[in-house]
Image (cartoon, rainbow, N blue to C red):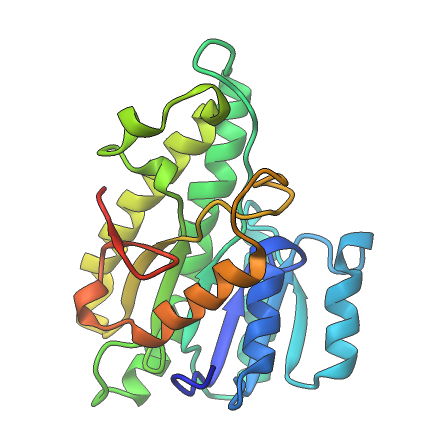
Length: 258
């Protein structure tokens, strides 16, 4: 797994599941990033133990507290990242943090809708806005490079369940996660807006469906392991170009409809 030499990367929601596996895969690259910033709400809690163990063994892994629903938390993390980079930019930002609740069209309420939307949509928006200057700095440094994760890229972890075109194919008793689905559809639109808005700055923006993965969110019934999913994601990240700006991709590299 060689691929592009990504210098600096930040992953939100990295204490478990796909986020944790992403951190592991970046660490295991033949040319690992100079800095990997792994963020989560409570890095000192029980769920942060594996991350802390990895950080103790890898000097390039920096653990940071970041709650994507709290702008003060995001800004504080940004200050620490900027200080650690010491004048360098951020090549890759992966908005991975997300939540899912099992609610149907009949029983979803406003509290659930707003809570899920705040984490899955407003969170990535705020994180992207806050770290934009560091992405822009990297894009400026690599101005002669084509769009890629080596230059500057913003990746939102989305879901095929947010695809409006595939709704009729996917709505069934096991997929009644209404607030999650609606939030991912909104995240997809955010990605399109970011792709249009940041294109002039040289920042590539895309949405990625990691597949149905065996995680706390995906349950044991899922067909993919985190390793299988993230191995595919890493290949996709290495191959991203301007052709993938503003689209929804699957973990295996296929393009999904909005």
